[in-house]
Image (tube, rainbow, N blue to C red; front, side, top):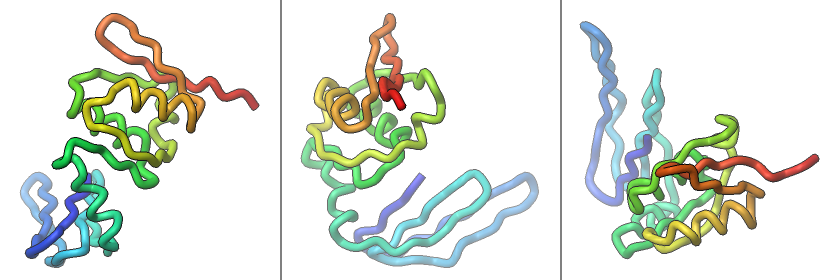
Length: 133
């Protein structure tokens, strides 16, 4: 998870059973990057920061994002449910700009740029690679 700061300041805290560890405070144009075991502070230039807020205008921008993160963003906006036929697909990187509610546009982006096919099975969209090597 990432928390990007447009203004103000923030601090992250990681809690474990009977203990807590706080990260240094950070301010605007930085982000807190949370992983399972740590929290890091990373600088972010204004371009990527502004693209990350395009959801407020009904758009989603992916800037070298993990496919798993992009899929989660699209699922939140469209209500679609996704599965990866191969979990390794989630580690692919994707870039692009789509309307937030344009599920077909997102699936087209995956097909044309990453050779990923989408098969609708009941109420789930299964993503699989069509690439051949």
